[in-house]
Image 1 (cartoon, rainbow, N blue to C red):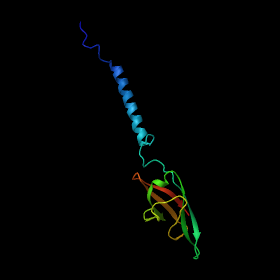
Image 2: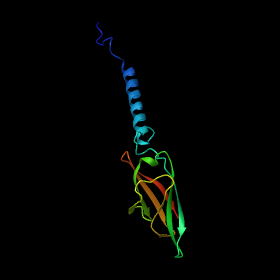
Image 3: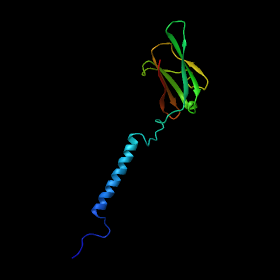
Image 4: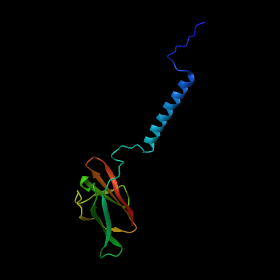
Length: 136
């Protein structure tokens, strides 16, 4: 009697275990990318830009002028332009000067409170990121 099985093949049990191992590894890789564990995108990396906004009073009660004070950070020199949104998040106004410098104060348009201010910066790696968001 001859055996049809070749000595070089794996048994069905070993084949099943190998398939399960491959599926588990693939599932782990896919899950890591979905949940951002293995993110390599430059856009998703946090940008190091430090700024504060103070509200300067005006001669009209209830009106304030927000002033952006650029404090620095390792990515401030990578900013190619910036813009501010007052109270909407949709309509952005170009910041002036367009390229911020550490230690510079840039006034924005007059506001009343409560209002929300967002600052979005564009960087030399072609990414755009909201770097400041606060409700006043």
